Length: 512
Image (cartoon, rainbow, N blue to C red):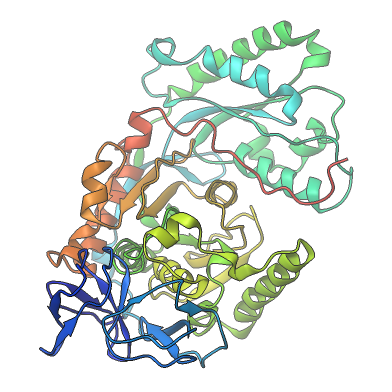
């Protein structure tokens, strides 16, 4: 992506026929175009929204980032607002080759590290929590009551423990004992039970549910099973008895976990989930490219980044397949998109029903435009693997793609189950997303929102829009913040105690 800016406009590629308003533009204002020519603004245009740089004929492809984002549904005059009222999906234009940054290997002396908790299975945690996981919704209240007993000052005697987290959900029964619904739930729960940000876990069931504890635990590696304790409400004698027994178990585990210490580990042990939510017209210009630059640094140091939200790469998949490690990786990504097309059709929907109302208010017109911006989170590194939802990251490092819905809590839940020990979440409209047991960094796309939500935003990429910072410099600063956070620096959502209710597994299959 190449950019050319004026005080009022940002042009992202030389072939673009639209620009992005850096600031709100008044009707009839005369503004400078790149190259020096003047342009009269025909409509009042909000910051982050698009303006036509020249006349665009009805049926002509609208270009942003040097890529098609839609087709003009009517003739558009130079200086006119370009948005949902005059742009639609229309026909397809041939894809263009991506323009990425070089990711040459680093020399050994430059290798980065962070301070993490090395677990018995060799994985590394960025936090030191105790988890209380429900196998079924019927045990959710007991799990929450147990965790609540260790909130606030109750943990003061164990300063090395970050907290006790109840991981509860609305499923686990009323489902087939075989098939993808149960398989997906069990894979997700196993991913959390084995997560390195948990020093230990108590699994709690009712006792008669479809999602039984024993097969769930047997699917875990032996070294993980050693730090799992189990309990069923029916066998304990009831809810009160189960809560009391659960408190005893957690008390023992907290004391053990308090002995864990951080040690210096390679960045190759860092697994970062990439998320965007509440996107706006700046997302693909500032925060997403800055995160992509940080991801390129992460990958060069041997770390892993997980790009997800399959419906929100729709229309931009060619930018990923063009840099897939091999034809099989590209084919598996395309296969997941074809599955989503069929899945949406079965449910009377279309993948191009995106963007959301908030996205549109922020200046995003079509799913193509949204996807092109979303893909930028993955930087320019080689795509090395394609994972199913909640499937464990295979450990080779690099940029991988995990098939998830676009809904942020469901997507991030899959990434954490896959091993993400840090989440980076870009937002233009503003998000307060927390993600226990994994810290979640919120990255603002624009300075006004960053200032307005200062107690929720961990990083401001708005300097890119303001013209005071380059993408590369922002990416380098973000990479440093990622390492500090992985080493224990609390995110703002952690400081506010957010993130206890964001476990939302993807539900597939019949509810009976």
